[in-house]
Image (tube, helix red, strand yellow):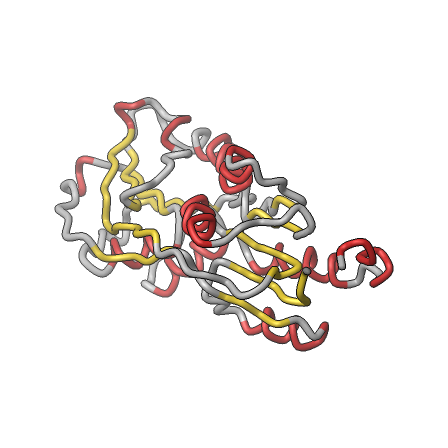
Length: 235
């Protein structure tokens, strides 16, 4: 039996999520299935690259904690939340992706900014999908692992009505200790996560174009306001 609950594979740092659940009387399970650890790294010399592309807030924080680049260095980010993380370190992005949930779309516009003789440094996770790099010439990309991502599977009580997955690695961790019912509503935080869910034989009901709470909350409200009668066959 489904429960009036929401599972999300993040720490739910945005207080609007708790407010939403209180408004609709949903129980909130905010529990990542992954953890992260800083890796010591040696960055290329500044003259060896022209851009730094950050694909997440974590890539910003883990890179900046050990390597503060020159203020003149051009920086690009996957989306608005990563841009805000960069601003917290005192830097401004020269390029901000418009649909962070769709890396191919972001890459399409980013490659128009990069000259053919320019190189791009990518601070990244040990399990990065390297979605942006696939659209650039191999010799233009400098991949730098700055943190490790570990799977940390945990059991979720009951069957929450809605499951929100923020990354493929979170899906992988979830499935190690939990099952997904066809009755549950599945939200993927971007196309890469949606693709992994489908590969895992999981139906995806919603795919967020922008990987943010701003994009997620309207979808949750839409689901919550479906009349109770529409769920009659779920119980």
